[in-house]
Length: 103
Image 1: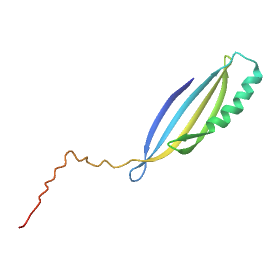
Image 2 (image 1 turned 60 degrees about the horizontal axis):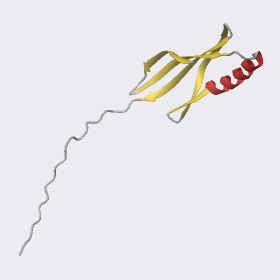
Image 3 (image 1 turned 90 degrees about the vertical axis):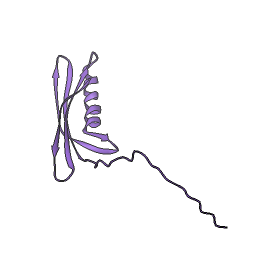
Image 4 (image 1 turned 90 degrees about the horizontal axis):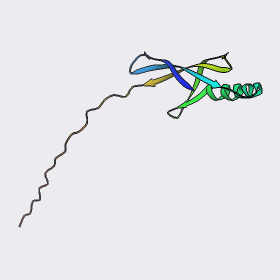
């Protein structure tokens, strides 16, 4: 189960900003403890680097605790972004075509 705990948009100079997101991942296990350790290595490498809009984002912080045979991972990511400027859209286009024929 994955849940977004918080997100924050932090303004920077110009039209740039940093997006900070904290995520919680819960892993429920009814199997042997060895499966949990295998899962730790898979999740640890899988959540330490994610892809957002074809850009690699590294985790700022990763924490793990065990609660009632459940692994709970808390991960923080920060991504620098740039806002695009809004340009007015062209609503209509009209043209006149004139053909001049001389005899």
